[in-house]
Length: 131
Image (cartoon, rainbow, N blue to C red; front, side, top):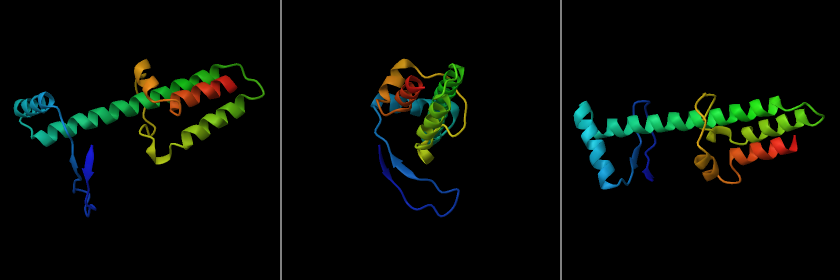
């Protein structure tokens, strides 16, 4: 996705973004707009909002389950240190964390694998193994 951005001067201004779509998807979005009496932009924006919310939910749920699993483990001498490492790993996401305190659904295994070794799932697994 390419992006052309201008510095917004007011809250109501929008960022212009160029997105390449397959012709079939473009046609479906246009048809939805016609059926719902909405502009193409409104349909795309609603779809993107839905996607972002879904991803936030998935990531938040993954973290909640990991914390629950950590808390359910027998408490040993290193349990608190494992929790501290998990918190530190979460904190490294900083402003890039798309979940931002929202709850959601559990991710699919395929999505968890696609994040890669440096992803949250790998960090949680390594912290649980260390705990």
